[in-house]
Image (cartoon, rainbow, N blue to C red):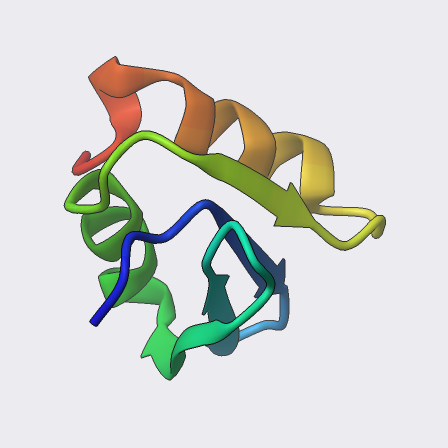
Length: 73
């Protein structure tokens, strides 16, 4: 498995889709994650760009993902 350079997140109420891609655009992973799993999964990844779809909850998730104090909270 290669190194993830970008993670794309599709937000939903209970299940989220996470797509990881390498620097060349190749697919590294595709995962379905529950709400409880999402922050733990992102916190376990190496530093990279996280792209989140624009929706009503995107700002809240962006703050949670970007703030190390709340990553596994």
